[in-house]
Image (cartoon, rainbow, N blue to C red; front, side, top):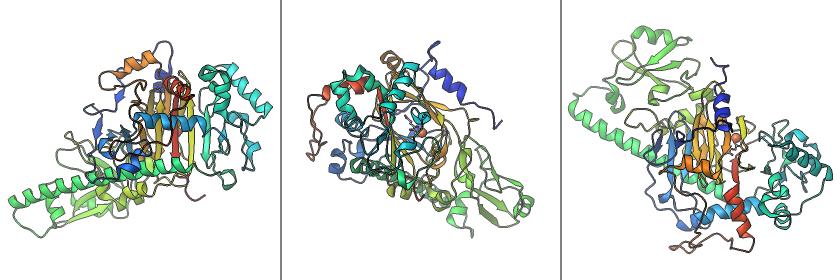
Length: 501
Ligand SMILES: O=C(O)CCC(=O)C(=O)O
Ligand SMILES: [Fe+2]
């Protein structure tokens, strides 16, 4: 049933303190794990310097995973160097909470005219605030209306990472400032987006584009190979090579074809040896999990006697999102298929949308262990073809992602520091949530052999050994405090392209 909430019970399960959730069965985003598919890395060499200066490994070391049953969802692992993770943590602590950005404590927004219209309800957005004491601290601070010149300085001078000032910070908005109440962006609530984070976002997005192109290329090569071997054994006929490749598949009967034109009847695209896909004339893909060969999702092949007709559909892929342009312009970007023929999740991801990605708004989320972020979708932006980029730093967490409505039971992923979640294509508008930020013992429980690395012990070499570039950030006295924050809390940098308002 579409109105049944199958998301919240899972959210509650992972959020529960008593009994504690079993974390051993989380979906681990690691090579060889079930439920994820590692994309082929690009072969072309990219300029190492661009990456190292941002605290990133060169893309040959990135692992980009598609997640089964979530077309359009990618998780990048291994993009950040350990020092890069600390570099961006430092940015989130020492720069991003402060003016002209808006945070939940001060709401002081020099340069933004409408800073007084942020009601109390926005203080914690979907974050579970924890104790009532914490809530009243927030209100008190708002009444004080005192401009923090630097939130981090207050932390350094005011008792460190366990202090109440440190624990109060829950979010900060950069660029376009999301209005939690109205859920709209507006030009008069906008400040400059940090150039360094903008650059990081563009580099991540355009690197994903190269992975998508590599995936597409390898799919084409596989297709060409199989076409070649088939055409060597098939007698010639007047179908095109592509049709030739598909000739041996069952074709719906001719009556369906005729009735289909201009009607609302349902058509079935059936591919031999694969599950059938129901395609609806008005563009609705009815399979919420969308876990099969994507070609069958947007085309039906119909016979009207001697000829085969191909009909393309614009469809709302998994979970109802309208992907029309991305889908129709990029048919070949669709699913590489693993050995079980379940489509991996690059459906509807368009390399150009990643190349053109422009960071215009970001929410930096600061999580204490045991806090959570409620199920939601991010839909305030004007364009949905641009992906959401979501960078995890510090403590690991459980990340839930479902479908376009809450009837879809979510998958539960273990996210680690440095992981980047990319929500594009059909996953762009999927419900998601963070029910649990892990404590150290929970981390042990979910880590297992495939998820190494807890706290960063060894920063190693600050600059890259081949190009010499490294973060401009240098270890300073209070860096120990940054590292403590990193070990104790979780930060999420959630970057969006807003588009034309
Ligand atoms: O913390 C996360 O991983 C997700 C944050 C998020 O979904 C949001 O800020 O909208
Ligand atoms: Fe979100």
